[in-house]
Amino acid sequence: QSALTQPASVSGSPGQSITISCTGTSSDVGYYNFVSWYQQHPGKAPKLVIYDVSNRPSGVSNRFSGSKSGNTASLTISGLQTEDEADYYCSSYTSSSTLVFGGGTKLTVL
Amino acid sequence: EVQLVESGGGLVQPGGSLRLSCAASGFIVSSKYMSWVRQAPPGKGLEWVSVIYSGGSTYYADSVKGRFTISRDNSKNTLYLQMNSLRLEDTAVYYCARDRSSYGAPGAFDIWGQGTMVTVSS
Image (cartoon, rainbow over all chains, first blue to last red; front, side):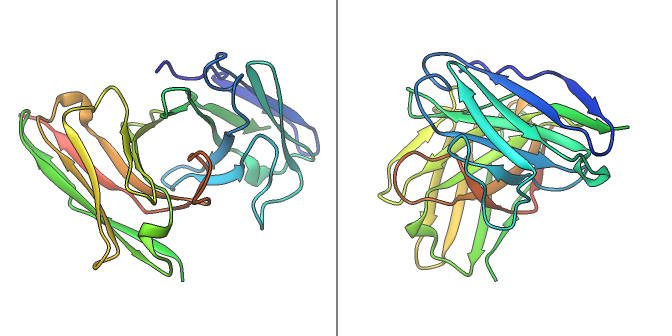
């Protein structure tokens, strides 16, 4: 159950777009369309922003979008806003009937 | 209001035991997949711990298999995590989380508790 691989940090200016990658294997990200993304502000519980690769929960801004190609899933945030500054985590269902998270990416809005 | 409230965290010595509770309101725990997720301090990443399906099947991360047990009490609408043989590396904030689905695969946690801190130290 190795963690999914995410970049430690990404940054962007307000109004720009950024993409965070999440690389797994053919036993998790590459096999199932059960990838989720979470946003976590300091001291707060995580918040679901994308599920099943590209679906947005009700109430989540359409500036958040998800995609997948092979063993790599991606989260794109367009029109960056200061409140988007947070940690982002991906997760995937695995062939072992377990779940695995990525190591997390710190997004800085410059 | 849909809500999860954890309790039961605290300081425990290595090798000790602790039981976490997660009281749910606004929905029926047994109708959803429910998981425990932990986060080691300070500011470490999320780690999935265990899931209980609506049908009662349970699964665990390798790091806790054989030591932790997930369960629920339908009459109390409460989720539990029994933690035995605790290790230093089990120190973390433990969150209970509700899956948005009750079919297919788990992993889309739409409701989270506030977390309860477990510290394993001598």
